[in-house]
Image (cartoon, rainbow, N blue to C red; front, top):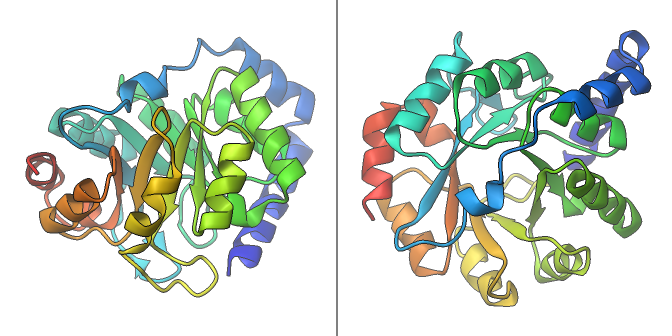
Length: 256
């Protein structure tokens, strides 16, 4: 599944590149106002922090919510206390777009993450051109040289990479390229099975000074508390927010 998602995302990027060449996207990226300091926004605190996700659908769950106005949803997330907003921009299985990200960026003052299947510099430049402050890099989707080069480009553009892992080996690979924001995804992107205990098994491999993000398998405040007790500085939440009252749900989650 991960290989399919990455191939689709790269194919879609190649299509966009036909009408918006690399040089044009690079120029737009460099012309953007400086990115917001996401590491500061997500730095460890007395209470857990939340990255709230604009997510219409997923391969495992199908359609979750229509979300006709992603900017309005993001505003409610910010009002509810989210420290950053994640926007799914993958169009085939998640029904997102870069236009969603641009609308969200224009509506909120917190950092915005482009969550997609990134495999080449063009996509990173697109993210910055659209106003992203963070970019998702999935270790399992990238060889080490590509992971390192994309991480370097993200930093050169003033953004922060959320480097997503699913195993001890992948955590080590993330740290080897200097990741300062490491996510552990409870969802296996090959089988889409969930393992909520994975974060706890890997958290100790992530040193102090690196922000720890728990991803997936969050339905209730008890799930957030579970991750917090295991050492999460930040929890990324999508489905639970788009299928319930976002402000009320965030209030409950942030109270753990």
